[in-house]
Image (cartoon, rainbow, N blue to C red):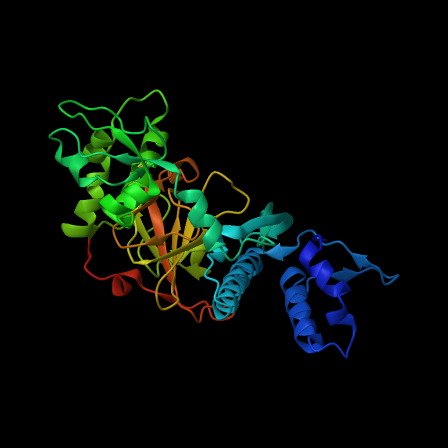
Length: 385
């Protein structure tokens, strides 16, 4: 029998669940009932003595997917509720950066082909700091007046470094040398910086973070400068924003077809997204503006594969599967921004065309009403082949 999650055990032991005079009694009991239906979906049997028999499995695959999606939905609602409450009190905070994995619950899942595997339901908690939610402006100003920061200079005749001038760096040696350029990291106080540049440019700072991530991926032994990194790799981001935006969808191969609505699991369900052809290690760029909420793994029993949950401006959830994230939760992304790198799905499914999966869930999406949008109708400015 599936282990009861810690949060549900606490909820059942709470005064709000036991005490009928508690103002939250009804809503708490409703939540508990809902979660009991999620984690114990009714396949229990009893022996002649009336004791519950442990079944061969805890959930069917469909029930497991619904449970995982319900937990994700509840987490997103909790984030929105906390941020709204904070904003009413004059506090602007990105709650998604305080999401922590509370526990992974093993579940025996019955698959359509009769296999029973151990998967994991991941329960996340929001661990807000007890203090420092409101910055002390006076103390902050006093401490930062004399603080030394390092700034990308405009040295030499390098157009690339000129375009990055004013970017705040991590340290004094953080501008990679490259030919015909005397660029350096110039030390200055925050006050001097503001006199020269005003406020930091968000686009430059983001490009710097992307460049750092790419250098990190190549490994410490590499000596590429940021200019070479940009020239060789991240210029694809500019092409994505300004050039012809064509996406190639996976056609029929040994594992099926990547178009929206195609049959899955022998006709039991339909494909709820599109599979966009991409080589392992290739950069993945945001197809729509939005905010990266949290990681969303396609297989909870396989830690080798990752995914991103990005919410657009009207509440649609964009899911990118088989992608190693290159950004952190809470990041706002624009169409064309680098968000990750394609993973090798062929290691799991031999004969499949390398790709990443893109799916769009509506704000009305629930376990009962799994409403998705055809990405071809949702994405603007793209052609498909």
